Image (cartoon, rainbow, N blue to C red; front, side, top):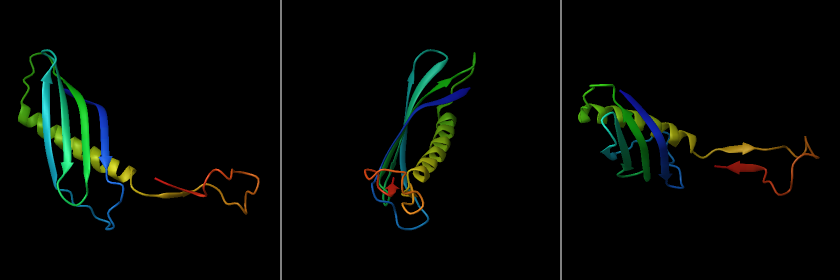
Length: 121
């Protein structure tokens, strides 16, 4: 069996939590749609219940080997575990950070007045 994550989407709150540790209570569901005998499409949705507001979705496909049996409970646990890992990586990637683009004193001729000194994401 091969599991492919084809589309990943994250909608999160604009403000970051102020503490360094993040406890998430997650509500999740997976929907399966059989395309043919060897392929099954899936959508997994993760939603936080309390403190940190986010919605996360992965669309993918499961490819079964010939005569392989699809056990939904086992596959759901694998997909959920992997989705949680991807979610935590994406939260880390989208956290607030600042980047200094240039130092005006050191590089007076480089840059533009249209670009702020610091970018936030």
